[in-house]
Structures are given as C-alpha cells and as structure tokens.
Image (cartoon, rainbow, N blue to C red; front, side, top):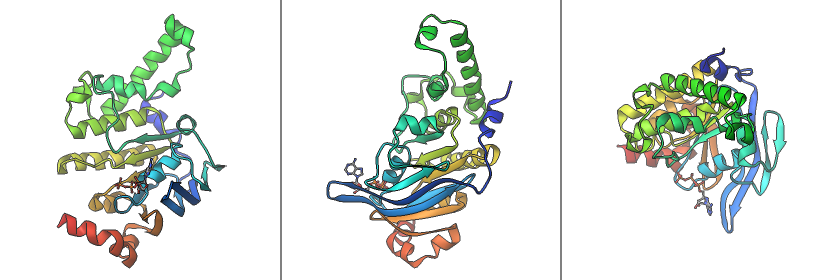
Length: 274
Ligand SMILES: Nc1ncnc2c1ncn2[C@@H]1O[C@H](COP(=O)(O)OP(=O)(O)OP(=O)(O)O)[C@@H](O)[C@H]1O
C-alpha cells in the first residue's frame, strides 16, 4: 500500500511546466477595482508568492484561482484548461487546496478529525454505504485515517492528534490547517498568510514545512505573505500587486531591487520592520 508521502508525490508532473496561467484578469466590487488586467504564470514545483500592500488585491487573486470569485474579465488556465468560471468544489476536485488568512478549522474537533475533513472529496462510498457502515465505507475510513496519521507524523504534531484544535497555540493551529490542505492531495497549494500572527520560532517551523512539502512532494505552492524575509527566502518567483495592478515580478533579487516595488511596498514594509 502506498504511503501518504508516495501518494502526495504522484501528482508531481514535470518541473517547469505551466500549471496555472492568469491572463488579463480584472475583478470589481461595485466601484472598487480589486484586480486590473493582471497576468502571470505559475510553473509546476515553484514556490510562487504574491505580495503587496494591504488592499492590493492579493486575497482577491487567490479567491479567483480557487473559484470563490469569478473575474469580470480575463482567463485562468489550469492544467491546460482555460476557464472563466469555476466553483470552489470544482477547483478542489481538480487539485487546488487552500488555507485561510484567519484560521478556518473546527475548533472543538481534534487535530486528526480536522485533518480527516480534508479527505472529504476523496470519499467514493455512497451515502447509503456510509450510513450502513458497509465494507467500502469501512475500508475507505481506515485508509483515510492511515493517510491522515502519516500527515500528522510528517508535520510533527503527533502529540496533539486527539487534542481539540481550539486549545492549541496559534502556530500549531496553522500547522493543522496545512495538514488539512495536504490531506486533499493537492497539486496546487494556496497559502494565505501562513505566517501571520506567529512568533519567530513558529515562523521558522512553518517555513521548514513549506520547503519540505515543495521539496519532498514536488508540490506547487502559491502563497501570500507580508513577512518579506520569509518571502525572499522561500520564493522562486514573486508577483507584486498594488491597487489591483501588477507592478513588478521576478525572482527575489529582481523584485527587491525594483524601484517601483520599493516605492509602493518594500520601502514601507522595511520601515515597519525596523
Ligand atoms: N467581497 C468583497 N466585497 C467588496 N470589496 C471587496 C471584497 N473583497 C475584497 N474587496 C476589496 O477589494 C480590494 C482588494 O482586497 P483584497 O482583500 O484582495 O486585498 P489584499 O491585498 O488581500 O489585502 P490584505 O493584505 O489587507 O489582506 C480592497 O479594496 C477590498 O476592500
């Protein structure tokens, strides 16, 4: 039987192939233009970051990618298939998983049970089979449990597997949320501010897990993050948004020396950190 780690690797694809292409995407909420004609491409096995000041349109972009929002204009091509509109469950079915800026876990449920909810879309047994607890439902449940236990080992949260997540420190809750996203066996993992609210040690742990997920499973990761040290350390490629517009992109060196990016964002974020 394949281990969870082997299963997570099977989606690897060819490094450097286009996984997601965003072309001329615009999105407005009434008079607010959240995204204006934004284009970029995420390649397989990249760690790709979207940065920019508050209100720049970063979360709106993630919401377009995973089908929460539908762009007014433009196209998103995922695994070679262009689409204007995609519903969140379709995006999830096709291998896009996401964590949220504000943790979205079931606080009263254990770590294991929260991670198990990430396997929901992998369930093939019918409602009736589940209700009557027939053979296939039992086998699936055991298989999902084994998969989730292996994710728990990988994320080093064995000690908390039966603990209600609401009682865990913030950094560990974020790790459980990552575990739940991994349980869906995604090909594209969207992380919305994975380090927000963490202390230095928690940030270092999370950075290590993001790198391991990318290295060991070849998983493509797109993240939004305000901690520039983390972004510059982790990213292969960065896109910078400001007022809904793309104002720069490239590798960490290219982006951090781009005068437009420094003026709109890095200057202020560096001042805030000083
Ligand atoms: N559901 C919505 N309804 C109305 N306006 C929205 C909605 N979602 C986002 N906006 C607006 O779109 C713009 C971009 O917001 P978005 O949350 O995408 O920015 P962001 O870069 O993620 O910001 P932050 O770093 O503060 O999270 C903002 O002006 C915001 O108020």
